[in-house]
Image: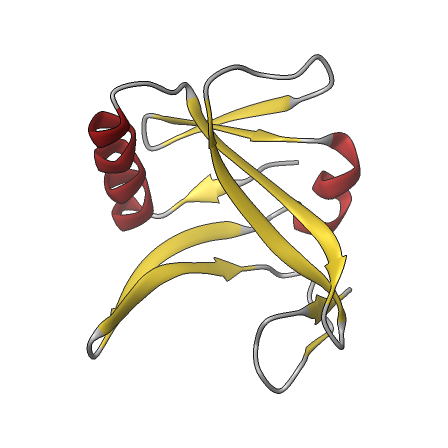
Amino acid sequence: MAITLSASAADRIQKFLAQRGKGIGLRLGVRTSGCSGMAYTLEFVDESLPDDLSFESGGVTVLIDPKSLSFLDGTELDFVREGLNEGFKFNNPNVKNTCGCGESFNV
């Protein structure tokens, strides 16, 4: 079981953490939302929670709660630029379908 970061995502996260001046890594998760059922959550963290699972990828600590891991196992987080837009993209092999707006997914 693992969560990985692309080189561009790891670089961007390290830059964000440096700009913040604090933080131990990034927490990924899922929440109930949208028309397809679930949406991704992403936040910078200053300390881990007792039940967090920890992965190291590209020099970045990635934290995830056990419940979310069942939906995100095998996911690669990428940072992409598409035209004038840039942002994180989840490459999740568990997704069965997504909503038309791309904001939620179902496994």
